[in-house]
Length: 493
Ligand SMILES: *[C@@H]1O[C@H](CO)[C@@H](O)[C@H](O)[C@H]1NC(C)=O
Ligand SMILES: *[C@@H]1O[C@H](CO)[C@@H](O)[C@H](O)[C@H]1NC(C)=O
Ligand SMILES: *[C@@H]1O[C@H](CO)[C@@H](O)[C@H](O)[C@H]1NC(C)=O
Image 1 (cartoon, rainbow, N blue to C red):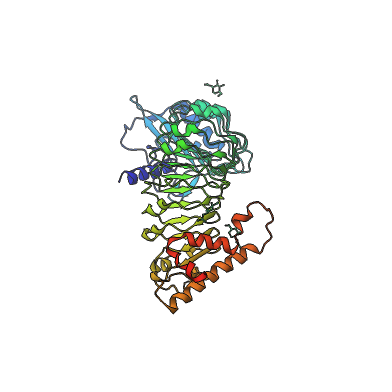
Image 2 (cartoon, rainbow, N blue to C red):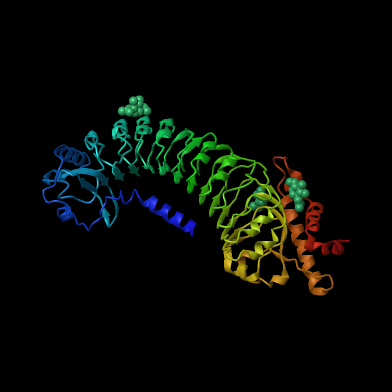
């Protein structure tokens, strides 16, 4: 329940920039009637502050919205995207401005892409709490002006999404110490993330994703931050261990960067974390000993962990986890049995590693499993999945290219299921006679085939040939190690 509540909060928070702020009222709109009726509920005598009115005209003109200058009072005859609050003297102040057509029913004024720019007149709106630009500037010539840093500590939300901005993030933004939301997603911002941003200690959402930022991540410690997304950049260096001081984090996405070094063990201390995506970086081992039990999604794929093994207890107690992706990490050794205790697991990708040994027997108990990839490993022994689940998963079950996985006949036959093509039956009870012997031979044949396939390419690197190119003897040894398959010994002797 708590997790759901948190997740809802996360969702709401994620959409805060879209619906601007608590002041934004979205009303029906049409191009012929951009102007709404006077705002009701306040005194009829209330008028917009004249300095702010002039500033709004200038800002509107700078974005190609000259039509606004014909509106006698911008707060009374307001449009979607401007929000005002009256003070006790019946003077309206502009608290929120938003530009860009997000969807059919949130039509903020659009910008003239050819000439839109940030107007310094923004500085003449001392009550501004939210500033929002979506697809307003094009051509890659607009920069984030330094003067935005002078918008003052009243500003709570600065959103400049998908605007083809160029240049760096100005250091001066570190002066906006009241910011709760900083969202610069989807621009061409380069250079490093200024350390001055560490001063934004009230941040709740930081989204710098889909830019070209490089250099290291500063030592952020934002106690109220719930969402950190800096994915799809060129960030380098280590994941700062200070990240564990952002102890309200619900979502961390650092994927698709060039981050190196180990995963800081302190990430395990983030007890509210729901999503952790560190995929597609250059992170190295060791594999962490634990993760927060609150996680529902853990994505670590495509990090070269250079033969790290997974500690047996790594996933212990992660009862909320529904997605675990560990593809292409160079991991080796046995799979921890604790994977089979992740009852809510729906997606499990373990493909493209060097896992050996057998699949955890209690995979059988993961009733919610809908996608399983264990292909391209060195696994052997029975695939512990019932026939119904095999059927249900269809092509989302991938088991090919392993040393000797087989299917246990006691789970029923899987004939006609494409995902199992090439997989032999392994079930044999010693007293069973013909059928059993037949199946055993198949299994042996399967193992031999795999061994041959693996041996065919000459070991180009020559590095770990004894591990990755097992002879039939090696394969057999592994099979024998699997308790259920001890009967094979008698067949081969
Ligand atoms: C804003 O920040 C810059 C650099 O971070 C600093 O040099 C400047 O003095 C600050 N300005 C104000 C008005 O605080
Ligand atoms: C798995 O590989 C490791 C070496 O990486 C080896 O020591 C171990 O015996 C193998 N386990 C099995 C079950 O084959
Ligand atoms: C089989 O899996 C291994 C990883 O265990 C990989 O290196 C190899 O390229 C795969 N073979 C094929 C034919 O895909």
